[in-house]
Length: 452
Image (tube, rainbow, N blue to C red; front, side, top):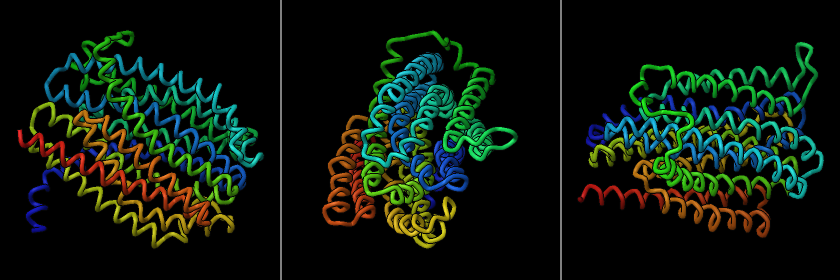
């Protein structure tokens, strides 16, 4: 039976992994920025500034995923139109996506600058943590605009199956971010030590360079010449814009519901103490790394699903999607085992504070258990996105995280006295709920397509 299943899905495993691995490389880039910031600040400053990184990242990621989600709306549309060989529409979609993403980037910057930076004083956080958090958050907010320009061209190229270039740009960008981060935070080569603000400045510079590199690649490469005939940076086409927003907005909401639950958990943990918040930052940073790998597999599933949907090849669509589920179950099972076995060692990557390490180690055991659910829910979202099915999955994410996850976490953490562990148990229940409901939705939609 096992041999038969492997033989049936083997071509899809190879196809999906070939597409997914470069996307994984570029997706990890988003997490590497936060991870690098945490490691640099944890080693070259103190626990208070590491807690500031945790607070800022938990807030900023909520703002950032709105922009990322809207930018992701381009990929399934490009994949579908390419499947139909409608090349002119691809150029129109890119034009409108670029304009939409720049406007969204400006809006999100204004939201942080004129909203979040004022509200952060009233979140019942440690005053010393807030003092360091503000300038760091201000620099990150500016970086949203170049990041979304990078995302526009990245999602366009990936929708057409060109996934390696964005990976290389992301990896080089992150190398620059790490080098500059160490220089600015520590204070080297005559530059005065900037503390936590240094990683904010290095991230901004990194994202400007990435936006420039990715846009030049797409606009000058022969690979995209036939797709860019109708591309104009000032072209606003109502039909194309509405298509992008109809997928992009629900995707942004999906990410917002999930990430806001984790951000909400971080804020709740911050009311317990700075040590617990620093431990949470370590564990969530490591869990986010495996999540972004799963997200890369999910993005590949979106592209393959969209392409097969455009070709009306529903048998390959379903088999390719199931193969993505298989891949992520194997991968997340391996990472779960690593998290559990190495839970006492991994926190030392970030800090040597012996008050923080034991708490982070406990959280990594819980993270090990929710790995499987985290991976399968994001693949489910990716497949459904490729079908253009975004509204019901958006409701499922809200239900899973804000009706199940956060309330259970609050009850276990504060009412039952389990503290930070209880809050993480709640997040695990939320991921489990999302995973089951999205899989059922996938089964229903793909079986219906194959029965027509």
